[in-house]
Image (cartoon, rainbow, N blue to C red):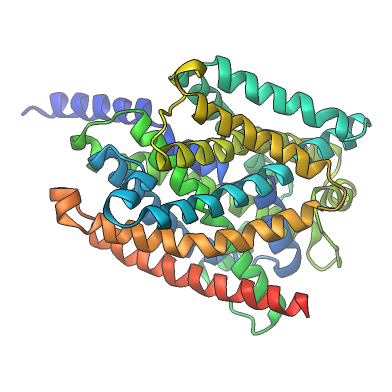
Length: 418
């Protein structure tokens, strides 16, 4: 075949790959929600550049596990709850989905509060004035928008998160030192460093990301032959997610490391960051918080709705009318409403919501990875599309890391209850 024709064919294939970007890219962007932004900034503020190399470690873990669940959804045409029920246990599925729903609702509450807090800082009105309009906007998009419209809106929001790359450039880092610390492993033998490392690794892999991408691959009704092509979307999404995380950690280190900042939530982070960053950089940071929340909240509520609907055999999918998938949309909107209730309940703080959601995620993610590994290596289910050595190795590695994280979180929970 002439070289000119081969090049044209490769260009055409790459165009098709770019057009196919969606579930993986949206999942990666949603992984950097306001709660994640706080975590990454705190990591930079408390440990400097010493944990940037860990993102090189977490990236293949994220790619492996997200690619595994995406392939399962494409090959089987089923979601994780449907397969778990069919091949393992309905009780296991119900327990798994209940934990997911509770963790997601707690995180929705925290993310809604974060957007409202940023708007309060910028505009000046109390946060309560922003919660309902934000929720109403998301509900309107979900109830009255078509799937392709919703998908395109989420992709645009994902792209806007590139403001964090601009923030790093504006912070004017020492490039040589940044690269040196990125590619040179650092391990400090103190509890603060270990806590930050576990928090950072735990933030990059979340249960809702697995449920969402699997559900969206199923929603897009891709053929079995596309199972080997899904990796491009997943790799793009996870790389983008960790590039953003990298920038957040680096900015936190450049502006706050060594200054003894006591960051508890978005409000204290904003109050600490604003004088250090300057007005323009702070506005970029604020835009990122708002956009990341608007991206993550529908994904959190959507992953909950898909999981519940598939567990109980309800019709689901954002291409269905509300009248055709009442249970699915009821859970979707209900998750958002309960998130608002958490924010309006004085007894539940945002910090507590984030903490307990992480504990619940820690319970769930190793189990999900174990189930995904069993399914993806079962030839009776996957046929010729069983998991690759790369996916198996890094998925097992991710399971071990998340198990350690879970044990550590329960240890911390036990110590705090004494």
